[in-house]
Image (tube, one colour):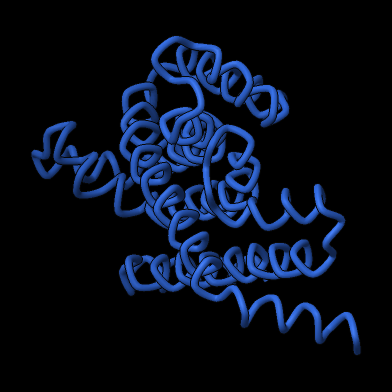
Length: 227
């Protein structure tokens, strides 16, 4: 009970500071995921019909994922013009989001039923119209699933950005370890966990709201047929 009281007291006594850390964490994630969606969805669309190019960029994404985040931060801060800055943190998060988003875009676009594409061509649609009106809407659930994975991952990796100058929830954990303050560590860990759960829930809700009822019905029918 004493430890719980210490944790509660630290949280209530430092609420303004903690709120600031949460806001900074949110801003970092929003900037990074917005850039990631624009960059990796566009790249996925560009390589969707080129397996060799897709294999190359997906291989690069896998390589980046294999590199520890601290090492990526270290490489970025050594680049002139970046250094200890938010730019370095954002670039690192964007790089880590490459594989889950790009892979889902590429796979989902290429798994659209060929008969549907042929029917669209038979209606006189151009390749661009087919992409915009047929492929992307059908691929949207899988694309959003990739965005969901990438965003949740960013929240955790973003805490380590404290070592390159970010002042987010990672500060609580980092300073708690330095000072042997378990109350700071616990508060930081709990808030990061809550952050992940809330963001995951929000993107799940967004995914449900963005996907048309027709696609949901088709997916339900397929699931029923498999069972």
